[in-house]
View 1 (cartoon, helix red, strand yellow):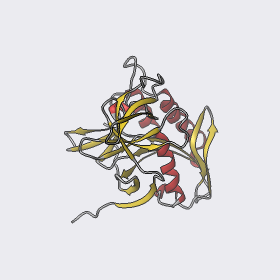
View 2: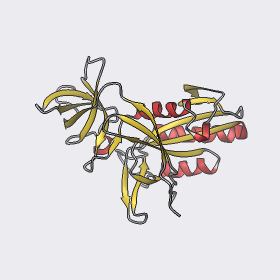
View 3: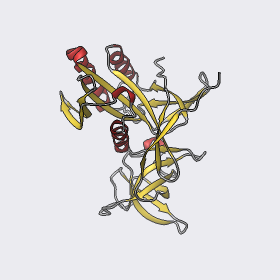
Amino acid sequence: MEQSLPIKHNVFRYKSPLVKGLIVKRPSQYCKTPYVADVLYNEKRKGKLAHTPALGCCGLTDKNANVYMIEKENKKTCFFGVELSILSNEHLVGCNPKMSENLVEYILKSNLFEPLIHLSEYRREKKILNSRFDFWGIDKDNIEFVLEVKTVPLAKYEENYGCLVSYFPDGYRKTKKEVVSPRALKHIQELERLKLEKKEKIRCILCFVIQRNDSDYFRPSNEDPIYKEALKQAYDNGVEIIPIVFEWDHEGNCYYVQKDIPILWV
């Protein structure tokens, strides 16, 4: 039986045009914060400072990376903001973590996110326990929900599955006994705590936003076994773990792709 193509919904377009650039140094030669890079752009290879909100993003927004940028309204420090990484095959990867939160809000408002359609109410950022979660609200069944968003820019080819697999997290660790992101670990542990305390009176959701449409699975990274174990434990205790996909085009349009992304736990 022939499989139908996933449905795509255009949910966002940049107001200003995308500018193609090449990152030549991060941190910048002129501004030493790791969130600022030196970039070359246009046919004359002019140089400017650009904000890289995901730091080097494991090479996607680091030296020698081709990127799409948008011109910033406030140019006090940086002229551009880096938004998308351009892979060697011309596929695009969203590399702005804040954009993931905005994209989730767009599909919530448009009733496209099936786990949370027809919400009674919601709001951005709410302090609960020792964390500030990205979304809080009341679902259509009058049940409280807490939703945290994580950006998943990275994917690698896995021979066993014959395709790219998106994974989270990845990054620098001083030792193998440390986690990549203490903040991400705290979020999943507190979502689990909320679920265990309130049980059926609350929905605790962790949404992994994959801003690329070239992978078929998601996995908790094997490089961080502490986080992987915490995520699986929270899942077993009722926390909803939901990977979702967005696809960018070279004109600056972003599409919500309604397709199933299985989670690989082993």
